[in-house]
Amino acid sequence: MAKYPYFSPDNKTFKPWIKISLGYRKTHKVSPGVIALVDSGADVCFCKEDIGIWLGINFSRKEQTIFTTANRSTFRAKKETITLYACGKNYECLFYFTNDLPHETPIILGQVGFFDHFKITFDLRNKEIEIL
Image (cartoon, rainbow, N blue to C red; front, side, top):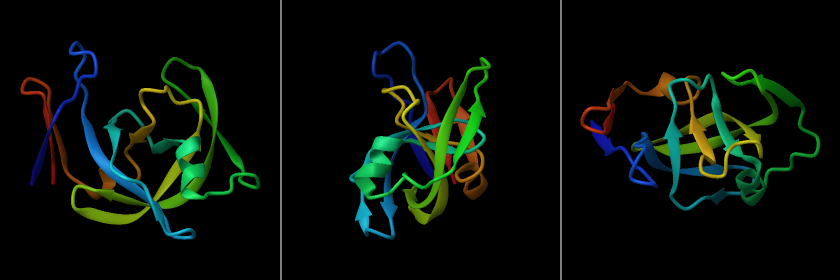
């Protein structure tokens, strides 16, 4: 069992962020610890394309997938399987890479790829998230 405090960059809005690392087996590169938003509203996992480029992913021949957000805007992303190091586990995880994510949210952990590997309890009142 691991509990993580919610984090607020502006001390106004607290969100469930956790520290993770990302790795790419083709280049053997692993990111240093980075923060990721645990987002129950995200269907899949997303990451800024710039992080994928740093890992050594070649996106030039990757097919794009179109996603529609809750406010009906659309964006394109390219998928690649990378290693996710989170909450004491590491496993291969499909991520969708795009530079359309907000600067302050470079990595989003969603239902498929994250929630399907853990039991997650959000406790907003106490500003913490429990991940088993």
